[in-house]
Length: 357
Image (cartoon, rainbow, N blue to C red; front, side, top):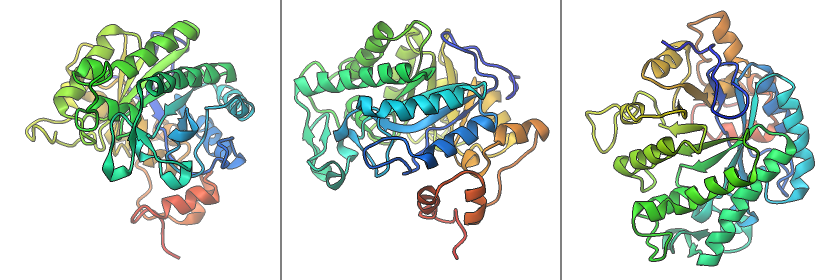
């Protein structure tokens, strides 16, 4: 069986020194204009120092109108480059791989945050969102590609496209939220068109060694298991991406559409060619890591465990049965792990995560 500490060679760019990635985590720490803050710099570089094979930023929005939460890292302007360049240099100095997650919240962009009505694949009355015009879809695709170019210029090894969790690319993929009648709607192939055009644009305009991943949600947010597996299969077969990141919520959960099926299994069964496939979802111990890798994953992404322990990979190397701290934890614990005040306050909104004073 694959070991968590084995190196992972991707089809492009540098190999990961191990099979553990930092999941892209919302942390609310950047400045209001999207520029990198010192707190976010510390949070991320501490994870690289802690031994993660790949350290990924939080979701970074590629258009101002695509901001999904306060204090979100931006990559929609060249004004973001100085901070991103400093971050990439520091991450790369630790010997791992660095990546920016590219994101657009679409209908989930709060109007009070972006100063106008949010946008989506189609009108969404529940969110007060309007449908993007065809020209605006093209501009959004270009914004993702430009975001990748900025990440490359800053020195990152690659980017991940956020196609999960009901954000804009997922809103296009879902037949529930995409009711368009133009080339970007209708069949699944049409609904995939924005994602595929972004991938093609990045491949055409970034270096051949620039790494590219995609995050997908296998279910919820209007995605059916059949559609999710079909999207995954096309991405794997075409081999234009280097890794697929599956956000499962829980690597041990059963599929909503097929309760007799482990949600992870249909994706592990897909032919993957040269594309690595990773999973995220309640991986908090050495046992959880071994379970996911034993199921066929090439790598795992750690969220909560990485918040609790900046050096989870090093702790796992020292103790194969290491388990993340039991919740709740103190604010002092999180501060010691490199979380700034805004991030600690955010984690305190997660039920049972932070001890009440």
